[in-house]
Image 1 (tube, rainbow, N blue to C red):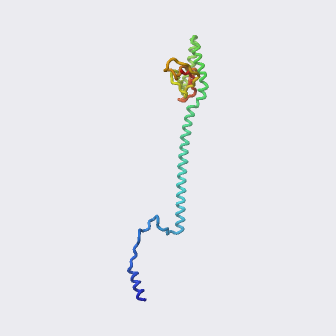
Image 2: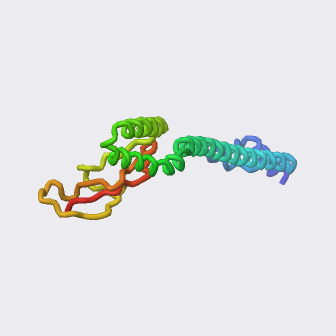
Image 3: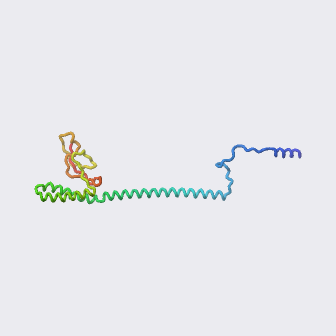
Length: 187
């Protein structure tokens, strides 16, 4: 028996241990770290994820604020462009009355020249503020800028669907319709 033990020890000493398979990869290697290290890593990972979330929230809020600033600037510019719209709308009947007075005062030259002067000044001031008169007569009827008050039969086929006459002028303020032209349309 003693001989068997000695041969076995020799046999074990001569035996080489070879690695079978591939070495452990970092993804599947057994975690041999201590619980303290594991806890530190999980806290680090937790803090990193919180930091990423906070950065994401910050970027979103910054983007929303930037969009808010741009939107309010656009709204402010639009408000400035249309701020005088109420005044212009209130003055349009006065402008219409001046035009009617000019037509009726053609016989009296002094009255006519005075009314023309006042009319031209008022019209110039309103045009400087962005008011522009529509040219409706002869144009194709368009519901976006015209308001049909009546239809009349026309002898010429080319005039069908077009504005024949204008009862009240339409106006734009900075390319926005502030009063639709009241027109007579050919059918």
